[in-house]
Image (cartoon, rainbow, N blue to C red):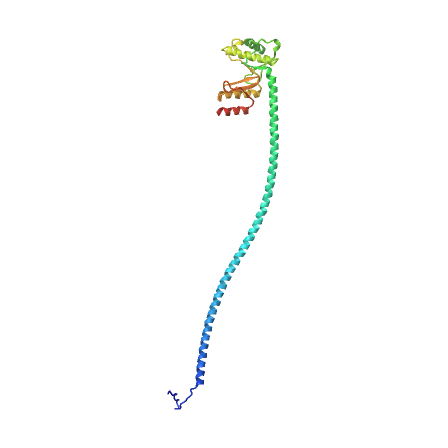
Length: 300
C-alpha cells in the first residue's frame, strides 16, 4: 500500500491539495495557451503584413501599369485626334483637288471641243484653199494652153518674130498669118525664153508635135544654126508654157527619174506624168506630197 508522503511537520495528509494543484495546472495551461495565441497572432500579423505588403506592391505595380496604359491611351487619343484633324484636312484638300480637277476636266473638255472646232475649220479652210489653188491652177493652165516656150540664147538686135518664123519653117509648120497672136521674150528668168501665143491650142499642139518629130529624125536636133552661122551652136528647146506649180512638179518628176528608178517623165497638156517601167500605167503627178509617197514606195 502506497502512502502519501509526509510534510515537513511530520504530519501526513491523506488528501493532496487538489485545488492548488489544479490552479497551478490551470494557470500553466492558460499561460501556454496565451503564449501560443500570442505566437499565432504574431505569425498571423506577419502573414497579414506580408500579404498587405504584397497587395500594396501588386497594387502599386498595377497602378503604375494602369497609369502607363492610361497615358498610352491618352497619347493614342491625342494621336487619333491629330490623325482625325489631318484626315479632315486631307479630305478637305481632296475635295478642293476634286473640284479643281473637275474644273480642269471641264476646261480641258471645252478646250478640246474648241480645238476640234478649230481643227475642223482649219481643215475646211485648207480644203477651200486647195480647191481655190486648183481652180487658179486650172485657169492658168487653160490660159497657157495656147502658148509655147522657146528656150534659145539671146542675140543682139534679134528679131523675135523672124526667129519664130525660122523655127516654124525648120520643123515644117506652115501657119497662116493669123495663127500667131503674139510673140515676145520674157523679161524674167535666167534664160528669158521666148513665148509664142497661138490663136488656139490646136495650133500650139501641132507645133509641139512637129518639133518632137524633127528632133527624132535629125541627129543634131533643133539648134541655133537655123538663125545663121553662130559662134556657138546651142540647142533650141520647145516646150509647153507651164504654170509655176507644174514647173515645180516637173522638176521633182525629173529627180524621181534620176534618183529613184523611174524610167519616164513627161508633160502633156499642162500636166506632169511619170512611168516606172515599160508597160506600167502612167501616173499623173498632182502634188509634192504625192512625189514624197512615190519616193517611199520606190525604196520598198
